[in-house]
Length: 388
Image (tube, rainbow, N blue to C red):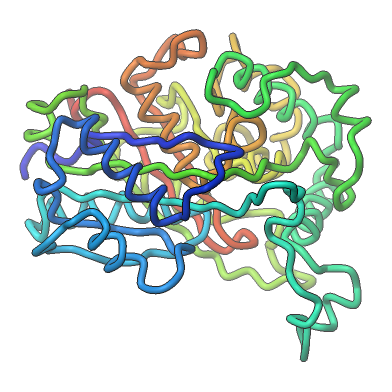
């Protein structure tokens, strides 16, 4: 495979308040849609990578649902929000090595239930808190929200980052979502709306936090030479990288200040042969506004501690110098883990963004953040072959 690898197909089910289908059924629908998008039959797939969360043995069960036989690559991957980027890199390496030729990567989830609040979707039973973990629970650290609030507060204490600067990210992201017919939240918001939204875990307001969504998204990775002959324009994979910093949540660590984006971004950009100044569009993992801000710093788009000022400058929104989360991200469009930024990157690279299409799409950076800043994956994609 001398011409590298590419994403040849994208499949997206209905996203948001989608009821009546299990994650496995949603995943199967997404893979079928991705294959059809690429102009492939399901029998053309010889690899399947599945994100965790579907229960049982999701890889085997999904393959059976799809009628896939004699697969050369089958695995379940879990790096939480970094899973999509990791899956695509493993798929690309498998294609480059000859271990497989055509690999589907899929994420599916259905945490929303009818007549239940979104906040209850990831609720943990109090009986789960025992032993040493019960000590942090007693201090109020009982959710992912609380730990990300701790990280954001650390950044604020060190660099003077403000809630209003985080709010600027929420506002610019919603501006993009207003142009995306698939976005769950399209109503415009102002900085005053952000500041007035209720606290979730101080310093994070409701509008600092991502949505909860049901649905599934899949992509198909194959050789770039083969992708050129398929139904849709190939999205070439120029580079990839991962970072797993292992910061402990204790005094003296870098938790909240520096993330795995620093290592994964440097690795992906080196492989791609680019620098931050070459990037036209960013699709960043935005489980919280804070993760966008700290990722911008760690990728080198601004100096450490200057992410807040950079976001407040208007650089990220429509008409800005660095269009970021052009579909509305997880804050306003839909929450499909790392498949949210990846799907929008494919849309932008193909020029399918419609009203939200970025003016330049030659180099697109995609990020995924997982756990409590435990994992990070970065992809560099382009509509052009590497070196062209």
